[in-house]
Structures are given as structure tokens and as C-alpha cells.
Length: 125
Image 1 (cartoon, rainbow, N blue to C red):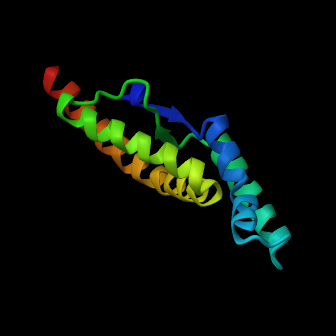
Image 2: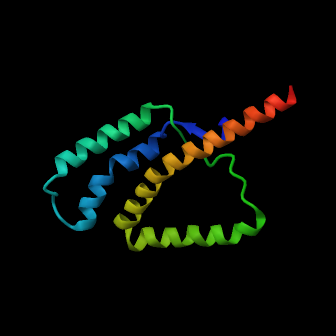
């Protein structure tokens, strides 16, 4: 069950999460937010902890995509690329927020897969 997950946040994901306050500042068009140093510090600390911890996060290397879902996924990737071209900062902010939200979701999925694996292992013995 571990092959579907990374241990902790990988470095590219951590880089995106660290840049979230900068992306928000660029999106709003302001030079600096009033609480930018505090947001930057909190973001850096949270991302540092996520990079060093053993929380399972999503790994798409072994992801199996059903044939019937191939066309919708390709269309979503094209839409995402178009959004990156037309609304770069906002798209990256949404991407970072979705990644933050995926971390607890991956934890629940991991625990469910671990329980199922252990239950099947006990039945096999």
C-alpha cells in the first residue's frame, strides 16, 4: 500500500506551498500585504514540517486511469494549461490550496488501505 504514497511532501510540492503567500501577493497586485512577514513565516514553518514529517501524500506514479476516464482527464489537463496561460497566479493559488487539502485526504485513504491490507494479511494466515 505504500507504493501509492510519498513519505512527507516532496520538494516540488513543498516549493509550491512555500510560495503561496507570494502568489497571493502577486495575485492581489499589491507590493506587500500588511501581515506578509507573519504569513511568510507561518507558511515556511508549516511547509518545513510537512517536508520533514512522515505524513503520506499522493504519488501519481502508480495511478491507474480507467479507459473511460482518459478523455475527460485529457480535457481537464488542457483546461488547466489554458488557465495557467490566462490566469497564472490564481491558478497556482488554487493548485496550492488543493494540494494542502489533499494532504489530510491522503492520510485517511492511507489509513483505510493499511487497515484493508492488514485485514487481508490476517485472513491469509
